[in-house]
Image (cartoon, rainbow, N blue to C red; front, side, top):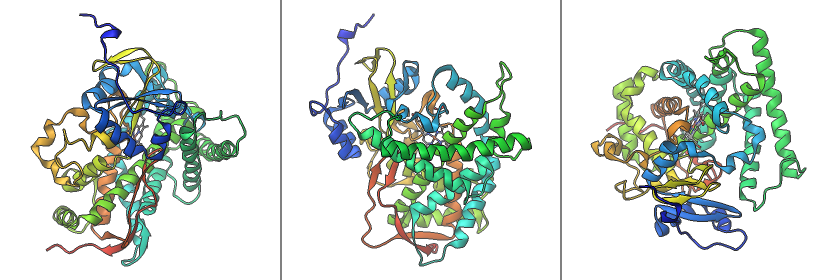
Length: 453
Ligand code: HEM
């Protein structure tokens, strides 16, 4: 039976301002707005952000249709196109045949057998950070986690030490992220070529980024030596069909994308993880028991990863409650039918792990931090997209295995020696920016780890 457009449902949603639509409410508190819409209007909600028609898909079955079974009908959402000068045509932002070719070239670098080769660099960078820590010291845990994942990204991607180039890249990327959020929040973002102070700052940041990254690429081409890092693999990657390699511009775009997509997301899971552990000493105690049983005081290696079950569950449960990508978005390029709803061409669909990961239809006691739920048989019966911190379908995170190993190894290395206590009176508020950040960091006190009783 052919279903006509008129037989399909049109979602409803909250009333908005005549010009700005729901943008003011969305801007005021993105997380609360997304949650309220789902509670009040159900699985598919219609909103308007200024002139843009947006649907919020809040059910795993609808999300699976968008990300997997009908993925051909969608491209990445408008927000990722707001600032094309940073990521260029890297994996996160490119589309169509160009994206597919790049994904095929890059995918082998992220297979598990390749990734385990980076375990030593991950543990060594963590150990170097711990050498500076003293019990009783006050530190912003989030800043520390950013520092360690930045060092790991620099080492595994460019074989570089942090300090010079890597910090310059990270600083410039922060300017770009602020520019992105400003543009997203404005009713009508001015084109990048208009010399507003924000645009000039962003362009300056990109020039700095390009100077560093193109210099590294030039040096590498001249040396022609395998440094064992991701850039060496990118330089050697060859298209199976025509034998071509990547141009300098493509290398720059992919390296920048991997750097941006990889290091802050991972740091955020660790920061939120320590925040949750600080409030759950009973989980921390079990974690220490696991580490003692598996590692007995030595540093972890890639071989230990499958045995560090609770450590991995802590990472999974942290991403359930505080998914760094709190929203994943797509734009329809044709009229389509998603779960019986009519989605006109040009509609943006936002799917929020923040909302779905806390939906009581799928999760028992959804607000509770309970890593052991991941060892329960019940977890296997969940609909596929009740949990999607890494997105899904053909555009799912290429670095998810890399990230999972990194999370487990960093957590294990730190928790063997130290734990954190939050400074008294601290409240940590999630801030939905480009990613889900702790608004004021996570101020804590470092302590020697809990003894096992
Ligand atoms: C816990 C850490 C991470 C989280 C939560 C995360 C999350 C995500 C999500 C949700 C997407 C899909 C976005 C979409 O569908 O629009 C994505 C894509 C991507 N991620 Fe990750 N990511 C993480 C770590 C990494 C790492 C470590 C790398 C690389 C070293 C990486 C590289 C990428 C790339 C290149 C894409 C684009 C893939 C494509 O479109 O083909 N990510 N990530």
